[in-house]
Length: 215
Ligand SMILES: NC(=O)c1ccc[n+]([C@@H]2O[C@H](COP(=O)([O-])OP(=O)(O)OC[C@H]3O[C@@H](n4cnc5c(N)ncnc54)[C@H](OP(=O)(O)O)[C@@H]3O)[C@@H](O)[C@H]2O)c1
Image (tube, rainbow, N blue to C red; front, side, top):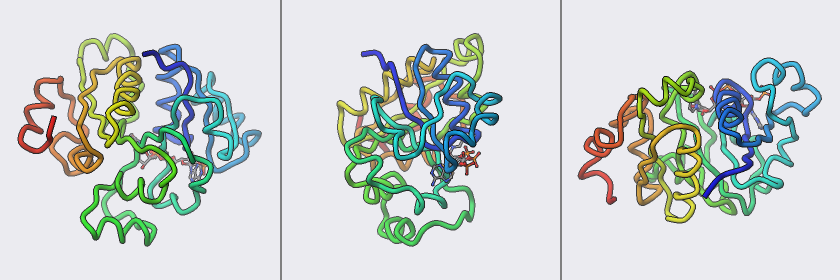
């Protein structure tokens, strides 16, 4: 399986780093921020020159998946309808005491992982957790650095086929996927978890999650 085109919602540090990394891997990118495409011209010329600016409403059109890279505190402003029917990769994290929308807090207080909370909000999308536990610098590292680190990245979903699609994307970006068998297990990829922001190979990442995930 080879991913040819993705959408990225969020054109900040993470979104533009992913756009650059994807372009280097031969993947076409549509990218959207909160501003209209014409207002992203200079920003993208500098940070993601090969990505095509689209409006948020169009980010899911004609792509194989959409990566969500909007701060969690801003998710109230993302209309779930624009992602309806999409394979949606949740790459978001909560940072320290970042205030969250009430629906998000309510879901977390019921013990859900943050991606399960996002999945409840974007109920018409197919959620996969991935690409959240790596910094934007490492995501966009050059091929030599990636080959040297042999870094593993986790991907968690309730749908095995969707997880495989995202695993393909991870491979094309120059990393080594480790599939977790449920969105609930995505909790282990979150800040404060066992592997967050750690440069680990497949064996070590798997070892750290042994007994915690069902793979
Ligand atoms: N930075 C990292 O290293 C990294 C790595 C992995 C995951 N993440 C996660 O990715 C998310 C974004 O982080 P970041 O560092 O990229 O933040 P950031 O630099 O502040 O960028 C946020 C982006 O989100 C856009 N945005 C805000 N509201 C939006 C909306 N309603 N619709 C569409 N776009 C919207 C902003 O667009 P405008 O500028 O047009 O308002 C901006 O482009 C966070 O949850 C973070 O935890 C970050």
